[in-house]
Length: 137
Image (cartoon, rainbow, N blue to C red; front, side):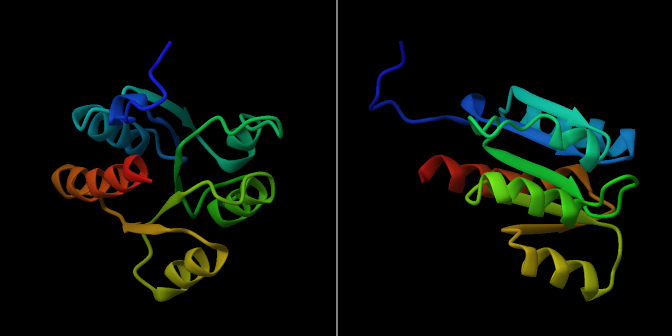
C-alpha cells in the first residue's frame, strides 16, 4: 500500500491521448514514455474516448486531445468530460494556425494548447512542465 505522504511521480500518472491520426498518437505516446509516463490509453476520436469515462471515478490525470476529429471533435469531447469531471486538465492540439481553435479551446476551459506539427523534443519539453505542475498540485 502506498504511503499517503509519498509524492506522485510521472510514472504514477494515467494519461489519455485522443487523436484521429495514428502516427500522432504513437508520437505522443513515445514522447510521454520518454519522460517517465508509463500509463497511457490511446483513442482515435472523442466518441470512442468518451466511453472510457464513468461518473463514478476519474480514470485519467490528464487528457491530450486533438481538436479536429471525425465523429466528435475535441472541444465537444472536452465539454462532455468536463460535465462529469470539471477539474480534469486538458492539453488541446491543433494543426490550424488561426486563433479560432486556440480561442475555442481556451473558452471551453483547456489549460494547455499545443500546435501541430509537433516536434518530439519540443513536445517533451512542454509536457514535462505540464506533468510536473500536475504532480505538484
